[in-house]
Amino acid sequence: MPSPVGHTLFTLSVLRLSGKEIFKNKFLLLLGLFLGLSPDIDLALIIIFGFKEGGKYHQLYTHSIFFVIMIFLFLFVFSRSFKLSFLLSSLVLFHIIIDIFSVDLKPPIGVPIFSPLSSLTLNIGILPKIEKSSFSSLFSKNNLQAMLIEIAIFLPILLIVYFLTAKRNDGRKGKKHFHWLPNQHF
Image 1: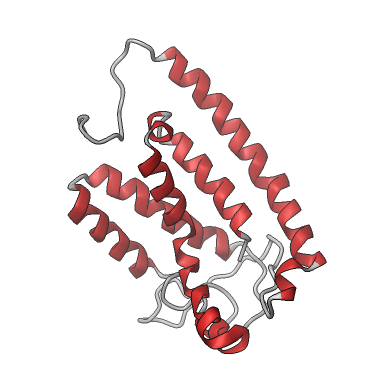
Image 2: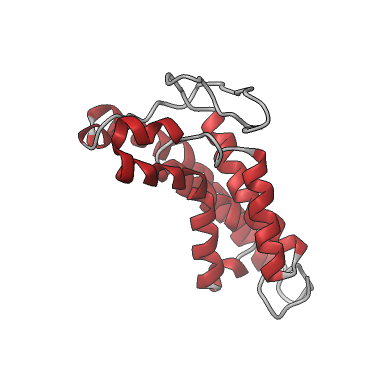
Protein backbone atom coordinates (compact mmCIF):
# COMPACT_ATOMS: atom_id res chain seq x y z
CA MET A 1 0.00 0.00 0.00
CA PRO A 2 1.21 3.53 -0.64
CA SER A 3 1.75 5.85 2.29
CA PRO A 4 -0.79 8.48 3.33
CA VAL A 5 1.37 10.93 1.36
CA GLY A 6 0.69 9.19 -1.97
CA HIS A 7 -2.99 8.69 -1.22
CA THR A 8 -3.44 12.32 -0.16
CA LEU A 9 -1.73 13.76 -3.24
CA PHE A 10 -3.84 11.60 -5.55
CA THR A 11 -7.04 12.41 -3.64
CA LEU A 12 -6.30 16.14 -3.98
CA SER A 13 -5.85 15.64 -7.72
CA VAL A 14 -9.25 13.97 -8.07
CA LEU A 15 -10.92 16.62 -5.91
CA ARG A 16 -9.35 19.36 -8.00
CA LEU A 17 -10.60 17.71 -11.19
CA SER A 18 -14.11 17.81 -9.74
CA GLY A 19 -14.00 21.61 -9.74
CA LYS A 20 -12.39 24.50 -7.92
CA GLU A 21 -15.57 25.02 -5.91
CA ILE A 22 -14.92 22.00 -3.68
CA PHE A 23 -11.77 23.66 -2.35
CA LYS A 24 -13.85 26.60 -1.18
CA ASN A 25 -16.00 24.32 0.95
CA LYS A 26 -13.74 23.19 3.80
CA PHE A 27 -16.19 20.52 4.95
CA LEU A 28 -16.31 18.81 1.54
CA LEU A 29 -12.55 19.12 1.14
CA LEU A 30 -11.87 17.55 4.54
CA LEU A 31 -14.52 14.88 3.96
CA GLY A 32 -12.94 14.07 0.60
CA LEU A 33 -9.48 13.78 2.15
CA PHE A 34 -10.83 11.57 4.92
CA LEU A 35 -12.62 9.30 2.43
CA GLY A 36 -9.50 9.08 0.27
CA LEU A 37 -7.70 7.60 3.27
CA SER A 38 -10.66 5.72 4.79
CA PRO A 39 -9.85 2.20 3.52
CA ASP A 40 -6.82 2.29 5.83
CA ILE A 41 -9.05 2.85 8.87
CA ASP A 42 -8.52 -0.84 9.62
CA LEU A 43 -4.94 0.03 10.60
CA ALA A 44 -6.45 1.37 13.82
CA LEU A 45 -6.69 -2.27 14.89
CA ILE A 46 -2.90 -2.20 15.24
CA ILE A 47 -3.37 0.16 18.17
CA ILE A 48 -5.69 -2.33 19.85
CA PHE A 49 -4.05 -5.66 18.94
CA GLY A 50 -0.46 -4.68 18.12
CA PHE A 51 1.37 -4.71 14.79
CA LYS A 52 1.47 -8.46 14.25
CA GLU A 53 -2.11 -9.34 15.23
CA GLY A 54 -3.75 -6.08 14.12
CA GLY A 55 -1.94 -6.14 10.78
CA LYS A 56 -3.72 -9.36 9.85
CA TYR A 57 -6.95 -7.42 9.29
CA HIS A 58 -5.49 -4.77 7.00
CA GLN A 59 -6.94 -4.81 3.49
CA LEU A 60 -9.60 -7.39 4.31
CA TYR A 61 -12.97 -5.65 4.27
CA THR A 62 -12.20 -1.96 3.80
CA HIS A 63 -10.37 -2.60 0.53
CA SER A 64 -13.40 -4.15 -1.12
CA ILE A 65 -15.87 -2.92 -3.70
CA PHE A 66 -18.55 -3.60 -1.09
CA PHE A 67 -16.95 -1.02 1.23
CA VAL A 68 -17.15 1.51 -1.63
CA ILE A 69 -20.84 0.69 -2.13
CA MET A 70 -21.54 1.07 1.61
CA ILE A 71 -19.82 4.48 1.62
CA PHE A 72 -21.81 5.55 -1.45
CA LEU A 73 -25.13 4.52 0.13
CA PHE A 74 -24.26 6.23 3.43
CA LEU A 75 -23.34 9.46 1.61
CA PHE A 76 -26.43 9.32 -0.57
CA VAL A 77 -28.75 8.93 2.42
CA PHE A 78 -27.33 12.09 3.98
CA SER A 79 -26.65 14.24 0.89
CA ARG A 80 -29.51 13.12 -1.39
CA SER A 81 -27.11 13.93 -4.22
CA PHE A 82 -26.13 11.10 -6.53
CA LYS A 83 -23.29 13.12 -8.10
CA LEU A 84 -21.75 14.21 -4.81
CA SER A 85 -22.07 10.70 -3.34
CA PHE A 86 -20.52 9.22 -6.47
CA LEU A 87 -17.60 11.65 -6.42
CA LEU A 88 -16.82 11.13 -2.75
CA SER A 89 -17.19 7.34 -2.83
CA SER A 90 -14.97 7.23 -5.94
CA LEU A 91 -12.16 8.56 -3.72
CA VAL A 92 -12.44 5.33 -1.71
CA LEU A 93 -12.30 3.30 -4.93
CA PHE A 94 -9.22 5.20 -6.14
CA HIS A 95 -7.48 4.41 -2.85
CA ILE A 96 -8.11 0.71 -3.44
CA ILE A 97 -6.91 0.92 -7.06
CA ILE A 98 -3.69 2.64 -6.02
CA ASP A 99 -3.11 -0.10 -3.44
CA ILE A 100 -3.40 -2.68 -6.23
CA PHE A 101 -0.36 -1.04 -7.85
CA SER A 102 1.76 -1.37 -4.69
CA VAL A 103 4.23 -4.13 -3.94
CA ASP A 104 2.59 -6.51 -1.46
CA LEU A 105 4.56 -9.33 0.10
CA LYS A 106 2.14 -10.20 2.93
CA PRO A 107 -0.16 -13.18 2.25
CA PRO A 108 -2.63 -13.04 0.74
CA ILE A 109 -0.67 -11.08 -1.87
CA GLY A 110 -2.77 -8.27 -3.32
CA VAL A 111 -6.00 -6.47 -2.59
CA PRO A 112 -9.10 -8.65 -2.00
CA ILE A 113 -11.39 -6.48 -4.13
CA PHE A 114 -14.48 -8.71 -3.63
CA SER A 115 -13.93 -9.63 0.03
CA PRO A 116 -15.68 -11.29 1.87
CA LEU A 117 -17.45 -13.02 -1.05
CA SER A 118 -14.29 -13.99 -2.90
CA SER A 119 -10.65 -14.56 -2.03
CA LEU A 120 -9.53 -13.19 -5.41
CA THR A 121 -6.76 -10.64 -4.95
CA LEU A 122 -5.32 -8.15 -7.43
CA ASN A 123 -1.71 -6.99 -7.37
CA ILE A 124 0.35 -5.23 -10.03
CA GLY A 125 3.18 -4.23 -7.71
CA ILE A 126 4.97 -1.27 -9.27
CA LEU A 127 4.74 1.25 -6.41
CA PRO A 128 7.15 0.70 -3.51
CA LYS A 129 6.12 -1.26 -0.43
CA ILE A 130 5.53 0.54 2.86
CA GLU A 131 6.84 -1.31 5.91
CA LYS A 132 4.40 -1.53 8.83
CA SER A 133 5.67 -4.42 10.89
CA SER A 134 6.48 -2.24 13.92
CA PHE A 135 6.28 1.36 15.07
CA SER A 136 9.95 1.96 14.26
CA SER A 137 9.52 0.47 10.77
CA LEU A 138 7.07 3.26 9.93
CA PHE A 139 10.02 5.67 9.97
CA SER A 140 12.48 3.36 8.22
CA LYS A 141 14.79 4.34 5.38
CA ASN A 142 12.67 2.15 3.07
CA ASN A 143 9.47 4.06 3.94
CA LEU A 144 11.12 7.45 3.54
CA GLN A 145 12.41 6.41 0.10
CA ALA A 146 8.96 5.07 -0.80
CA MET A 147 7.36 8.39 0.19
CA LEU A 148 9.88 10.31 -1.92
CA ILE A 149 9.00 8.11 -4.90
CA GLU A 150 5.30 8.72 -4.26
CA ILE A 151 5.92 12.47 -4.14
CA ALA A 152 7.89 12.23 -7.39
CA ILE A 153 4.93 10.43 -9.02
CA PHE A 154 1.86 12.07 -7.50
CA LEU A 155 2.97 15.68 -6.92
CA PRO A 156 3.54 16.33 -10.65
CA ILE A 157 0.10 14.86 -11.34
CA LEU A 158 -1.44 17.24 -8.78
CA LEU A 159 0.45 20.21 -10.22
CA ILE A 160 -0.57 19.37 -13.79
CA VAL A 161 -4.20 18.95 -12.72
CA TYR A 162 -4.05 22.20 -10.76
CA PHE A 163 -2.69 24.25 -13.65
CA LEU A 164 -4.95 22.66 -16.26
CA THR A 165 -8.06 23.19 -14.16
CA ALA A 166 -7.05 26.75 -13.21
CA LYS A 167 -6.95 27.63 -16.89
CA ARG A 168 -10.13 25.71 -17.66
CA ASN A 169 -12.03 27.30 -14.77
CA ASP A 170 -10.79 30.81 -15.63
CA GLY A 171 -12.00 30.33 -19.20
CA ARG A 172 -15.50 29.45 -17.98
CA LYS A 173 -16.22 32.72 -16.18
CA GLY A 174 -19.72 33.86 -16.91
CA LYS A 175 -20.70 30.48 -18.33
CA LYS A 176 -22.90 27.99 -16.55
CA HIS A 177 -20.99 25.01 -15.27
CA PHE A 178 -21.43 22.16 -12.89
CA HIS A 179 -21.22 22.85 -9.12
CA TRP A 180 -20.68 20.36 -6.30
CA LEU A 181 -21.47 22.67 -3.44
CA PRO A 182 -24.66 22.29 -1.42
CA ASN A 183 -27.53 24.67 -2.18
CA GLN A 184 -26.62 24.62 -5.84
CA HIS A 185 -28.19 22.63 -8.62
CA PHE A 186 -26.99 19.06 -8.99
